Length: 306
Image: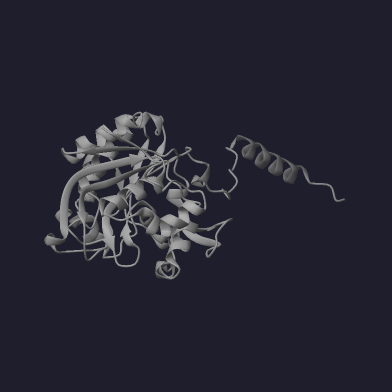
């Protein structure tokens, strides 16, 4: 083995000494948080009726034990409203901006470090964010509001998927400490209604149109790995016809109701009843129940009116 010259030895030693002073390089993250290990859901729902949207949210969250039960100091929280459509709040296609803003405020008050609000929209993103009223309301309440980008998705395996065995999912969702689903209640041409489970599609990359074939099984495949710790359903108004994007104010009925629970499936089951639908007749809810993701029998769901 050739001996190092004194100059080379000193040079090498100085580089080693410098490296020792530098912070260690963190290994690349290869595992993403999946929400099937999240807060254990129970079939207890809290329902508030009659009042301003923000007050309805506060009553529901108090019933659930306070936002501090879900959000801890320094947590990064992702909120998922439906803001997919270039529609005004009165048209009922998107989550009520007052509902979103109040959830932002409650999360920050509970100690959240960041509250992130975004959606992969169906209509043009800038117009949907603006005309829904959600972007402005959430920003004023203190949230980080931004658009989603193609590069911010990672392929995730779906271990127990029946139709889907992997899908690309937004990394900010996977890396969040807390995931709160904020769907609105409306008619849908494929699934009859769209509530919490359907709202998960806003987290997905790739061609989401493929999910509409064998919809019930595929959306429940997604729900088997993305399970929000909390779902708050905005039923301040129902879009009764021509969903999911609506447009006609005659299709909207205001009922000033907000529903919250840890069991997203139970929240959807109660939401179905607001449309006069039996949850057990809806394919995606029947599929979710069959796989043990939540309760759909309204007789077994404990409904607390607050």
